[in-house]
Amino acid sequence: MFGAALQPDGKIVLVGDADARVAVARLNPNGSLDTSFSRDGKKLFSWGAFSRATAVLVLPTGKLLLGGFSGPEGGNIQVARLNPRGALDATFGSGGKVAVEFGGDDFGHAIARLKPDGSPDAAFDGDGTATLDFGSLADLAFAALLQPDGKIVVAGSTQATGDFAVARLNPDGSPDMTFGAAGKATADFGAAAFAFAMALQPDGRIVVAGQRTGADDFAIARLRG
Image (cartoon, rainbow, N blue to C red):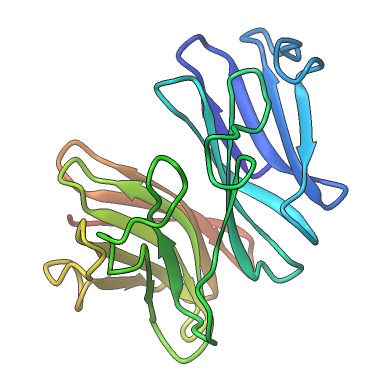
């Protein structure tokens, strides 16, 4: 299991992968499988070779928005939308699924913004996609949050230094130059560290949590907004 969300009715949605396919399950508040979801509480579908969902969002309509990737090295960002009963939403993308292509050999954080129908939002960096580089090696993004002012915060790790890597974008997809150094900030834990989750405090500070390798410790940092 890589992602989870709580519905307003108390039901719990879990996402991940099984047998190289996207796996989704919905539980009742008491932990039993919700058989109103895909008949048995579970759903499997594929985005292509090796599919995994890493995040899920419950929309106000009750539909579920899933994000993840396909390919053994996570080569393609994938998005899907499910109806409340678990069927792929045919009004989103192609048969309920959208593949986001970035192209080239860029190894930076990759961010995309889609319109409600799944098409790229050209108001976001001109084509709906943006990348941010922290160094010459691969940068990995695992978490994102939307601030009340519309700014977007993304967190993960940079292989160049092994640090937490956090970036903030303006609503139009450009780097927020008021955050860190040219929109980017890092947190050094003395060993390779990966940020997997974030939370925004009421005072605007950003809490980032993940793992420090070596001793396999929790790693937590708090950044000023």
